[in-house]
Image 1 (cartoon, rainbow, N blue to C red):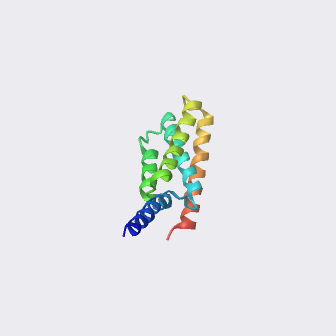
Image 2 (cartoon, rainbow, N blue to C red):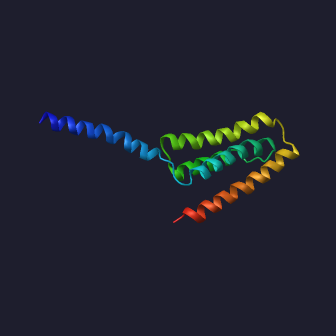
Length: 125
């Protein structure tokens, strides 16, 4: 009886980390999602300094992405870190809106749109 109990505990102990790892496992489109999150962070910063008066639009888009994907653990952390990297990377470079900042906004809008279209075409039901 004790051997069966010990065996059951070993199986349960091994099963818990496997299920946690399964939740954190990367999806085939995670690199695209992380890039999209980084773009959203960049747009959140740059659009604000360029006077777009969009408020929290790009942060809300990021929240909608997280809500739709419902990542957990490390996947969620990676998405949030990508958003923050985009925001802080441009915060260190631009203190005011410049023609280069406006060009970056246009390019990131185009890239983000392309990623969104590609993801939807490839993985949507």
